[in-house]
Image: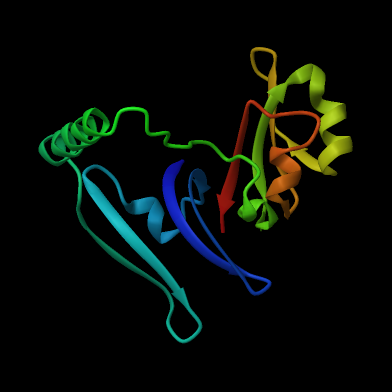
Length: 152
């Protein structure tokens, strides 16, 4: 699982968002760990290319946190929206990892279609959807406890 900032072009529309994603162990991004950040570019002529280097650690992270605190103090009352919400990118399509209370399994399948379920644990069950529109996952009747796109 990695936190990704992504820009996609699907059906002539651009989608930009930040979200946790499931990453296959064989993906180039899977090898980026520790204090390293990476940019992965997919292009028709070169395929997938990865640029990686140091970008985090205790001092850079501390500096960023202090900068955020100063910004909050200087701008009291400013609202910074967070979460998926019903924004334009809800039309983005992907397979999703979803996690729900086990009792909601049938209702979520009715809402989203076929889901490949994993074994249930502690009253929750998780599964992988077929490629669907993000808005169906995020604004339907059953709200998953977790809903993360899968990076493919």
